[in-house]
Amino acid sequence: MSRGGGANVPLADATGLVWLVPGEPELLGATLDAHPRIGWVQFPWAGVERFTSSGVLDRPVVFSCAKGAFAGQVAEHALMLMLACLRDLSRQARTPGWRPGDPRSLHGRRVTILGGGGIATELVRLLRPFECRIRVIRRHPEKTGGADGTPGTPQTPGTPGTRGTPKTPGTRGAPGTPGTPETLPPSALPAVLPETDLLVLALALTPETRHVVGAAQLALLPPHAAVVNVARGAHIDTGALVEALRAGTISAAGLDVTDPEPLPDGHPLWADPRVLITSHSADSAEYVARMLCERVERNVGNLRAGRPLEGVIDPAVGY
Image 1 (cartoon, rainbow, N blue to C red):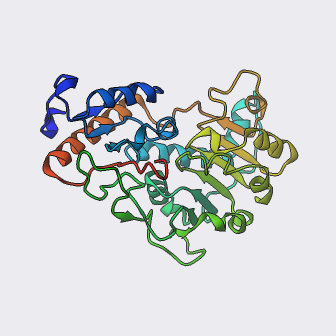
Image 2: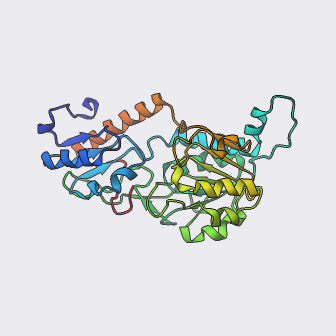
């Protein structure tokens, strides 16, 4: 805080607030109502669906979150899960004996990424050596302002958050160009899924994206396809995923998040050797703390200097 030029003061004197209380939007709303001088609130999480659904973000306050701040380690984790699915790592690790397998390479694979923010940006960069054929499905195929946590339109306290400076996850390429992502709207998903080897979920959870992958979408994937989720568990219809694996509709799944979460003991996904679950551990505590402190420091400095804030939330879209 102080490195950004700010100071820790009593709540009654504050014009900005770093809110660290999880899952209590009503308490935040009451706090803001009682302290109308507060014009900016910083959340420590990338996903803020509990707060967007409560209506607390409809107040004339600028809200920012940590979207994009943790993308480096989360994208790294996504890459690990992709490789694990292709190389049957979960089954190999569970086998108490010598079991030669026939691994599949990531090189040249057709990768579809749902979401065009910071995780997608970083994952596209990590995939370049593999010359994958990448398609990014996002709300705005050409540009989405502020969705990856980069500086957006300058915000001042008391002004509702708006979308920021447009940014894409990579250069828009021709369909099938190795290493260069093609960006497409959500309406293109049904046509893209049959041509997908690896489906990666890296998008914000909103009412529109809940169960964005269900029975119909899984049925469109080739039988050799794998699904990787490093976003939110509710993006996938868990029952449909269990059935797709049982029926051989897809070949594997790598899940850092589940629905419900935590996944109960005895759930069928725990017993499936084609599923690797990593219990929402894509980013380390040290990394999260460091990236959050840096985000707060920069945003305090940005606020004081009248510069754009990072990670501004658009209440209308939910992230």
